[in-house]
Length: 110
Image (cartoon, rainbow, N blue to C red; front, side):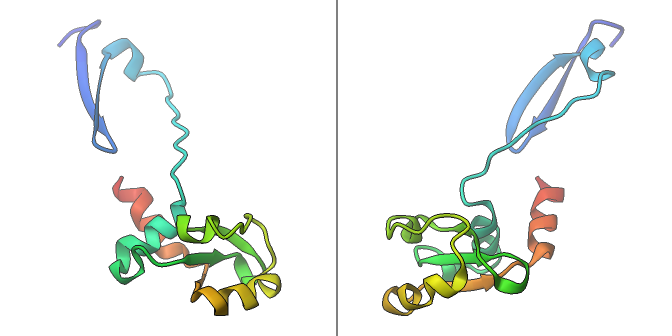
């Protein structure tokens, strides 16, 4: 195809068609994934699906992501882990340390 032709690309399963003139321009996408860290952990460990999960920051200081099951308990992002421990015991919340390898794998394969 010459200049002005069309190319089709797939981004996260969505087909995108654009002209060749747009392809030469830098493109950026901001994708907001619901509960991204929890979703990544669940992709690698399906036993976490439908269970309350919290992903903690580096050094396990505070909640950086949580599942819907935890959100409905009123937990806010950024809540220090020491404030969540009793709630975690009561509701069998699974707390995971940040593990960036699954996050990187998911991002590179998307």
